[in-house]
Length: 221
Image (cartoon, rainbow, N blue to C red):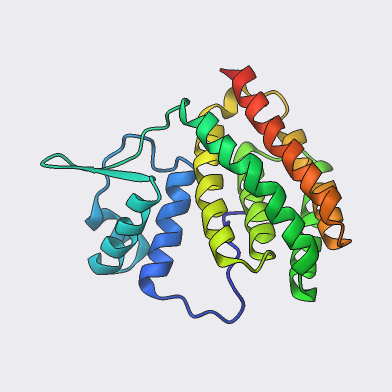
């Protein structure tokens, strides 16, 4: 399960957008390690695109705090700083419940189909022993499907960025987390509440999920 992002239907992605999504997910999943130098030529070659789309993608990723550029030193993957966890959680504790409630109110038939497919995948994962990489990618795809179902591009953009940063912290401590599968499986009741159109229940489950995430990370430190 290498694919993470949920792509809008019928969207013809530009080279810059394709480069952005690919590099973003490498950074989020720590395939590009924190502090590692960013080499434009190597990225362009590995993605099969020119340097211009990569350069455009890196500008966006710097704004999203996934890479950092230092004068006369170069560009590097941003270090993962555990002190950022409280700030990220503060934002997510307010906006994740809002997004889940709005998704429950606004999800189209297509959104519900996507979320139901994600639920089936969660149930499939629960019946076996997936590796950490697969769990992380499933977690990202579920969150992104929920954000897309809000049909609020500003809310979606903000939450994707903060979920990406939270996921980097999770990946850093993944070996110390005792019940990672259980955390991912918490999405099941949340998806069911959204598909059923129950905004109050969806909001509460989303709030609990964010709080459980922060508690699990702090317990692992």
